[in-house]
Length: 65
Image (cartoon, one colour):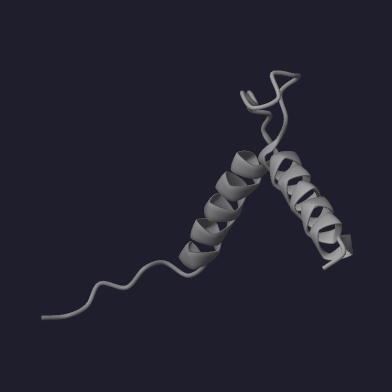
């Protein structure tokens, strides 16, 4: 059974579509129900969570034994 060949450059189109979908998903504002404030992008939510986690960690290691 002969294999069907895709036209040249087809994988580039697929790559661009996937990258565009990921960029859209990361940078489109979403409602942040946790803070109740203005909508934030997914990137902003993740960065806020990382910052909060680091603050909690640095506070915990600064406590006396």
